[in-house]
Image 1 (cartoon, rainbow, N blue to C red):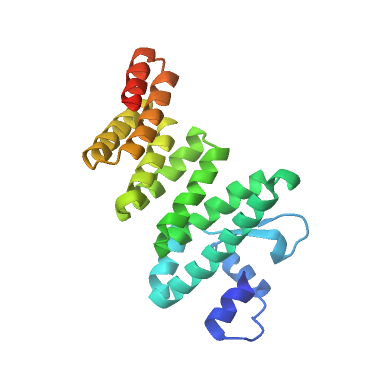
Image 2 (image 1 turned 120 degrees about the vertical axis):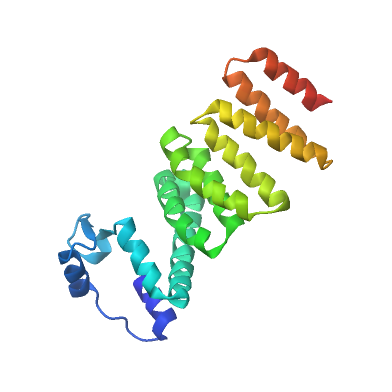
Length: 220
């Protein structure tokens, strides 16, 4: 990533070597180096405390922030796409999850709502555990609030799906509100899809009669 970022910032030239600089920064406690295998930067994760990262972004300036977000968003998105394409043969499911979650903060800051929503949908398809849902819900709320039209409906639907893993009652209420909105808008195709989601949720919650009533509403 560093050579690509340097090229965006300084043009085509050899980027400075980061080894000594990273060691000094780690020495001040501003990041933690986690080694994986060989003791080289390419085999390390650099973990930065959220408060330190927020302070760095605040002092970086809008131009640098957008460049970093763009380069890293593109990088992790490309890793995600590669992992998706190779997932079946290479057992890359773990990389889909890792790269997808890594890309999200950059995509959200860039306002790439549709792309971020797609990544979340693929993540939840593979891991809809309560822990993952809890991490993704604030991102989904941001996306839903910033979206409009069909994009907003898709984001709200995905939010309800994630919320179901934590609070099924709240997810039901959210789906009912969204269903009423799309019916009022005359979007009966989307209403049918949402009624199916609601029916499935109620069935999973053991509310068979309510699920049947919702299924009948879907048929109507």
